[in-house]
Image (cartoon, rainbow, N blue to C red; front, side, top):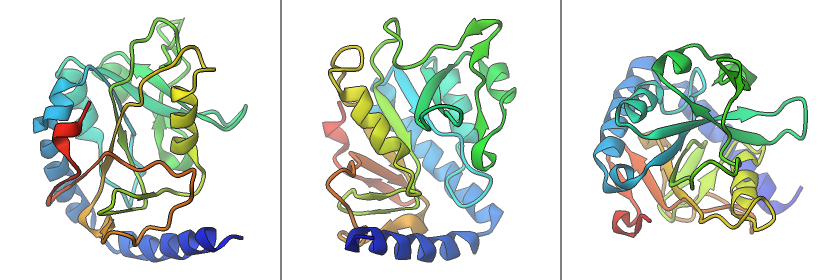
Length: 220
């Protein structure tokens, strides 16, 4: 295990203890504030095609209200699905309406996931040639710091997805979507406190209950 890997492992353990100590009401209140900040932001209002994670049962920002509001705002919404039968990669699949969203069943780690089909047809994927450029990805994590570094759960799903999505060999060159982390205030650390490796993508923006970190005006 490298030094960075060991440091990440220690920080994950520390953060797990902290996040497990938070009450459901505290997470709900913080999530409401984060949702309001995202919906009123210029980067969200400019975005047409948005990906947002569906949260784990505990320990991270609750996105249940946010994803419904994304649909209500007329955006095209994509949510993650982990391919447990194939290469273990994360795919972003389209959500067609609120009733579709409510029909999802729990998959890996108790996270709700879309089925591969919708009304008998293959569900649209962000990699499909007919799918427009993804503008914004709302990203979960274990911890973030004020230099916009992110600590994930260690599976590399988001880093691998972003690499694949922006690679010229995956159906054409796509612009990197704006990467916006959603963070409970306990997940925001001082700059330099999240260990990173060369392959780790930095966030463009972090949204917490207490404000927005990053230059919003630079949102593409």
